[in-house]
Structures are given as C-alpha cells and as structure tokens.
Image 1 (cartoon, rainbow, N blue to C red):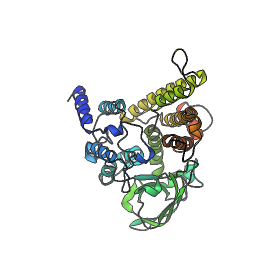
Image 2 (cartoon, helix red, strand yellow):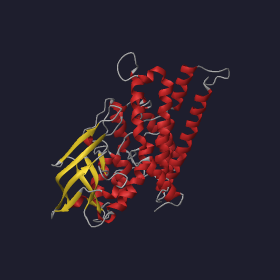
Image 3 (cartoon, rainbow, N blue to C red):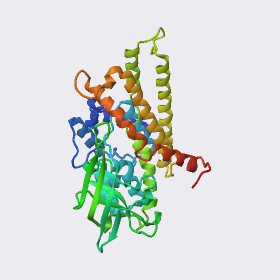
Image 4 (cartoon, helix red, strand yellow):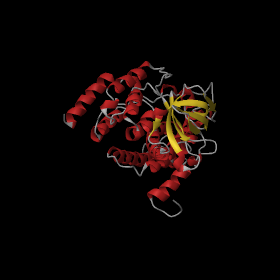
Length: 393
C-alpha cells in the first residue's frame, strides 16, 4: 500500500470514527487516562479510545505483536498530522505509552512485553512513576527505597514523593535500591502492582486546588521476582533512558494549540486598530512571539521524535522539556491577561465556568517547570551534555 492510499484510507476511517465532540478543547475531567478506574463523562471519549486502540494507533509505531500499530515513521507522522488538522483530542493519555512502554521494548523480557504492553495500548492499565523521594529529587541516585531479596520475591520498603496520579494508578514503575554499597550501580527497576498489600498513597494539594501529585508509601510490599526489568542493579541506565522519553513525550502531550482563542479574546477585550489588529501593540507583540516560540518548539519535538523513530538516542529531550514548560506557562499568562476581570475568579457567580477552569490551569502550569525534571536541571543538562560547555560531568 502506498502512502497516498494509506492517507486516503485513514481519512475515510477518521470520517467514520472520530466523534465531532472530540474536535473541541478538552476539559480537565475528560482527559482519557484509562485504567481500571477510568472515568468517561463524555461517552464519545471511551468510544474514540477503544476505536484507536483496536487499530493500535494509541501506540502507532509499536510492533503489532504487542498491540501497537506497526507503522513506520512516515505513516505515523501522516496519522498525527491528520489528527492535528482535524483538531482531534488524543485518544489516550498514559505514562505507560510515553515512558514505560519504550523502555520495556528495549529492556524488557519477552514475557514482560507480552504481559504489560497490550493493556497499555488498550488503556486498560494506568501506570505511575516511582522515582523522586523526599531526599532524592535532583540527586535521584540518592534514593533509599529498598528492595530486599526474599527468595522467590522482593520485599520493598520506602517512600516516594511527587508520584503523579498514584491514587488513580493500577501499577507503578519504581526505582529501588538493591545494593547499599554502590550509589548509581545499586539501583534496580521494578514493576509493582498498586493493589499489593502494604502500599498506600496520600495526595499533595496544590495552589490550583487539585491534587495530581501524591506521596506513596511501601511497607513490606511483596513483588514477584519476574517484575524486575533488566539486570539486577542495572536500573540506572533504564532510569536515564526513561527520563529522555518522559521529558520529550510528557512535554508534547498537552502542548500548545489555543493561541487563536487567546488572540480572539484579546480582540474582544482590547479592541482592534485601523488595520484590524489587536489594539494593544505590546500584547499583540507578545502573542506573536508566543506563536513563533510554540512553532519552533513543535519543530524541535518533531526532530526529536524522528531521532527516536530511527533508533537514535535523542539529544533534544531536555531542550523539548524546558521549551514546552516555558511555552505552556507563557501561554497561560497570556490567557489570564486576556480574560480581564474573569481571570480573577475562583468559584461561583459572576464568573463563567470556562474562565474558572482557565484560572486553575494557569495555577497548575506553575508546576510545569518542576515536574519531569526542573527547568534549572534541564538547562544544566543542555549546557553540559548537549552543548558541551564546561562546568562538570
């Protein structure tokens, strides 16, 4: 089949399967996280996820034998371009897709791939990430959550923090210490069922009023031996590779797309000049700058994705994470400014529901420069490892 025929068939399929209600801005409560506790206030969201998953297009480049779409880079790009052209919402948001899946494809055993990848593609299993600890954030290799060999299983004890959506997840991929005598060389990578006895979570409330982050506690948790990914004490290499995918894919997941709405609000609030432009010249310039910055960031994302699709280690993951965080924060600063007095609301009349949601998103965006690696840490990585500047290893 030629790419032209693929595109024609794709368009026909989308005409028949993409609900019109999912070609609009996505409210927070309609994000399709999936998992055993997934909620779908709009039934079209579930139908769209199931339809895309049935074709493997929630993970278009993964092998078909693991539930993926088996598409090459060119056809995966055609799929994404057509979805963007139609303004389609993502069919599935998933840390399993963005982070765990790619490293399982590289480091996992065949049994692990067969067991864990298809439920990720179908949105049946929701994963969270057990990396940071109260005393191991930027210096992640100082982690102290330990896994002790108990014969036919591991016994895990410790505490993780900033565990996004741990209270909603079915599984957690977790860094644990299996050798106390070595720092980086004593870390292993475990897959742990969140229903296991001894696991508890506690949400961390943010200024936005929501609680996507949690503390996660492990108290003598039994984990089967076959849930160790890669070699014993070989988790640091896997952790670093996963962070590349996290910074690249999580940044891209909710990036950009609403500057036209900001521009329309600015025209309404500030009026237009004789040339039909936003009357406030300074705001007009900032919106144009944000548009160019988003466009440049999207091009960088595409370049990084091509490197990954070609089997190369992307050098741009930290660049993408930093740029997308900055772009998203800039975006919501402009959004709040163009809302006028509506941007001051917190709840109730006379504020519109949509305006209240944008205010909360603005507050939530403050965490973008912390999660997935702080902007300061990513700038250091860019300086030292991408640009080769002096100042440390």
